[in-house]
Every structure is written in structure tokens, then in C-alpha cells.
Length: 307
Image (cartoon, rainbow, N blue to C red):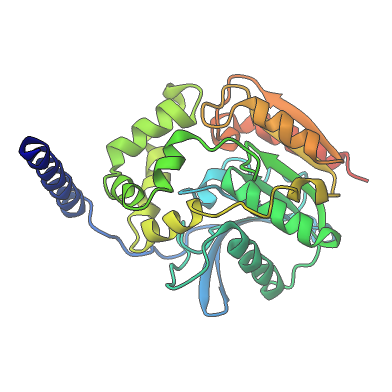
């Protein structure tokens, strides 16, 4: 018994030292000023940052919604090409990217869906095309089901959904204490390894720029706290949400997605009455980043086919 207690004590001290070392080596950073093609919008006192590409102003814009721990940078290679001539806006959700991280705040999937609708209202944007990747896809599904008259079309790329099988790493993150420790120990080298070996189909495609795009926003104070609340969203009560979606829908999936297998995409597309399913070869969980040309082709063809 005494040996077990000493072992636990040693592990706790080691974890604490690793967390302190990580914080010292990778201190918090400030949100940088606006860059080219970016815009800040204040909604209910919260700053939203977005990346935008112009298009035909008489057509409904395409709103791109990133996934967990991600940001609008994940869509920077496809913003104009995938939008088929429409105006394009890729948002940084509050708590991520270079938007504000207020606290307390509702960072759950349902909460972010409500915040996004208020953002669109603040921008005086009515009907939209929604494109969501991973957890961003779940946010888009909530909006499409709740306000069908506002959604012209929907693109779900390797999207989370209430009936999916939750991957083991996310189950750990949902566990109190263990989730906090896992995120606190997340460093840039670990993030790079995660992208290369669980998010991408081909590790060689993960450049230093890609790692920086993911890692730098996480160093803004409040990011990890917001991320934990998001990943701990309780899907109970939303199991039938896909069946309430009526908008034309493209479910797009990476054939080699190691996080959510393509069988999840097939099941999701089957649950949506007006959906079609397309698989991208040699692609993982982030098709807009890993195979941007194929992603842009699939999405733009889908949008051009809308009546």
C-alpha cells in the first residue's frame, strides 16, 4: 500500500513539474492585430475575428465553421476556391483562434450555435450556406435543424454528430481532472505529432506553418478552459437532430480519417433526408487542409448544383 501511495505521489509531482515547465517554455501570448483579409466584429461585447473573401454580393455567403482546437486558418487555402463565387467568411468561434475568450460563457455546441446566429444578425446576414468541419459540423447541424429557412445548403466535412462513437482521446478529455491534465500537458511538439499521426492521412503534408496555425491560438489565455467545455458538450436530447435537417447537404469525408472513420459519414448522410455522401481518397480528418484542391472541387461543384 505504501509503495502504491509513493508511486502515485511521484506521478503527481512529475505531472506538476511537466505542467510548470510547459507554461514557462510556452507562455501565454496576446491576440495579434488584424492581418490581410481579416475582420473583427463585436457581438454582445465579444470580439469575433474572421477571414473573408469577396464574392457576388447578391448571393448568399458561405460561412465556414472550424472544429475543436482549430480556427479559421484551417480554411485559408479553400476560402475562395470552394465558395463558387459566393462571399466567404471563416469565423474564429469565441474561445478559439483570435476571437475573445470571455468567462463565464457558453462554449458548448448548442451555445456556439446560438452565438453564431447572433453573429450573423450583427453582420446583417440572413440566409447562408454553412460549411463545418469536425465539431464545427455539429454546430452547423444545430443551426440547420433549428432554423431551416435560414440555411440554403449544408456541407459537413468529417463532422461530429450526436450518434457517433466518441473516440478514446475525447473520452479522456471528457473525464474530470484527466481532461484538464491532458490539455495542460499539450505542447507544440505533441500537437505536431497529433496532427501528423491522427489528423492527417499523410504525415509529410503537415508543415511547420500548419502546426503554427493550430498551436499559436492555443497559447492565448483561456483557450484550454473554453476547449474543455466545448468537448464536454452533452449530446443527450440531440440524437435525432440529423433527421430534422431539410437543407440540401453534402457529407464529405476523408477515406483515411483515423479519428472518425468514413462509416460515420455514411451513417450521418443516411440520417439526413436530402444528403449525398462523397469520400476523398488519401485524406484524413481535415480535408480542407490536407487536400484543399479536392475539397474545393467537391464543395464548389455541390454549390453550383444548387437550384
